Length: 153
Image (cartoon, rainbow, N blue to C red; front, top):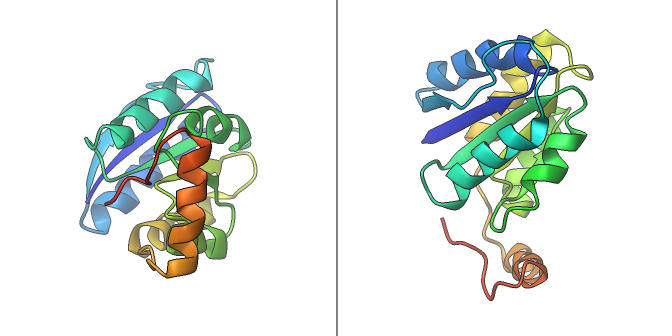
C-alpha cells in the first residue's frame, strides 16, 4: 500500500515517527511536507494529501496538525476523501472498517508520541468490511458530495 503523509507545523514533530511506522509495516510512504516546524497553513497539506488519495496516486493518507480538526475539515472538502480524526486505536481502526476512511488525521497536541505507532498500525491494518449497511451509508455520503457512487478501492 502507498501512504502519503502531510503535516503543518503543529504536527511536524511526529511526522518522522509516522513515516517510520508506515515503512516498518511494509508499506511505501511519501512525504508531502511540511519540511520544518516553521508556521504554515494546514489546508495546503490537507489538499496535497487529499488530492493524492483522490486521484489514486496513494491508497491512503495520514495528516498531522495541532488538534487534527482543521486538517480533517480541509481534507473532507475534497470529493472521495473520507478523513477522520483518530486519537484512539478503536477510532483509527473502526473508521476504516465501517466508514472506509482513507485519511487518518492525528492531532499532535492531543496524542502523545507513544500512541503514534498504535494509531498508524490500527489504520494501516484495517480493511473496509463491505457490509451492506456500510455500503448503503457510503452511497449516501457520496450523494452528499454530488457523486453517484463511492469510489471503489
